[in-house]
Image (cartoon, rainbow, N blue to C red):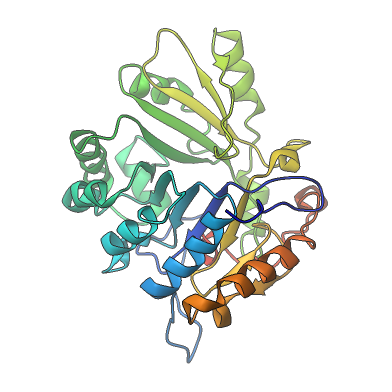
Length: 329
């Protein structure tokens, strides 16, 4: 194995978030409220299966052990199952995860599991079907719930559920969410709304900190779980009386970036050093042939020298990210 990917602040990168499409069929208020619209005059040209294999192999060769397939909605790719198998087949990759809106899970999650998917995150922003429709733009709450049940049937020991906190909508529903996970092995992850270039007004109206939820949990006997090397940024809490867990992702909290262990590659082959970075590093020209692997690794290492110590969200600088679907959130 080549030397572990590491930046100038001695942070090592065990986790790759690989976007395979920026297309999504939902219209979530905090991401694509007007639906997906491709760049005018441009036909989407997303990473091919071979390009995905090459970039994943390069990261695996340099110590990455977990790959998350993201979007957009990754299951919109007709070759999604083949992509899972390709990534899972790379030596050194221990975990293959995906984040999905869940609308295709009931039909396909068994084949995803058989192809090598080890972890699954499903976006569920409300347990109220009407509010779910309001937030996502799609009346598919019961379809997504059926998909979660099917994922358990397929053999997933735990399902992670992502809920973006929205003031005045779901941020006051902690009791309902806790009741839902009482007897279900679900890790419910509350994610603070993050400001992006197209969502300034929504952010001002709906952002709420996760600190109050954390305080409530700790006051009621919830305990903080320690992190693994390739775990994501969530602070995970468990309780002896609950089968489920609660995760909190709070990017506005001081020190959030100090334990960063993940890098992102967009669906068009650009390395993003931070979700809210100012620029990306083009990789696609080095994904054409297998013999380019060393050059690809060298370019990634060079890019890591430019990784900042932290994002600048507290200063109102959201970087180049127009919306979360653009590079996989």
